[in-house]
Length: 111
Length: 111
Image 1 (tube, rainbow over the protein chains, first blue to last red):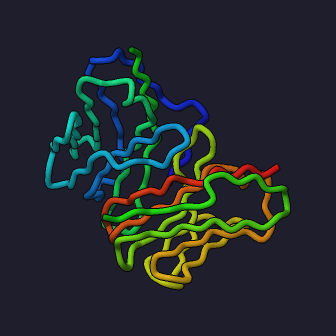
Image 2 (cartoon, each protein chain N blue to C red):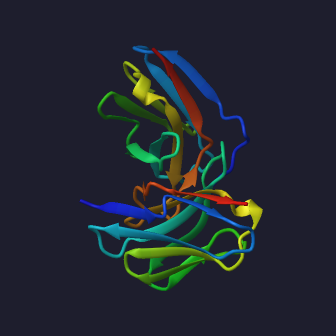
């Protein structure tokens, strides 16, 4: 896993807005990608995943987009709610047993 | 359904004391198991992972060790804690090359 600096990138949105959290990955051979949500003091929670043979996948209020050309992953959250406030991590896997985690992004949702 | 447990939830230990953190998984067989450490405001650092009983891979040399005495039990240990061992310790499980699911974590403070 990667370590990040003490200041996480932060995205501040208003309740009801759509949020987009971005992640750049480095390994062009990665074939599986995951988004996690981590609330303060808790373990990361699986949100959604996508395999490299897809470029879009939708869940409940969340959509993950994968652009393999530029090695970019994004998480879109529709109608963001205060309960969505957390740190969001992307992770990639090249078919090995371990994941490589990206730097987290803190999402702050104001009522 | 699968569940993952960690204990204790919080721990305060003096420098030089031993450590034992336990992780157990229910509802699956022969999972991959992982130990991560997360310092405050930072990403996830993989410490150890195991693909089977008695099989441990170390990612970061340090004064910690891991053991897997049973298929669904993973233990993180230290003989003598350092101040730098403070952090949030997370256990995770997965089926090979798939999503990792995290436990609730243990908050360790070394004084």
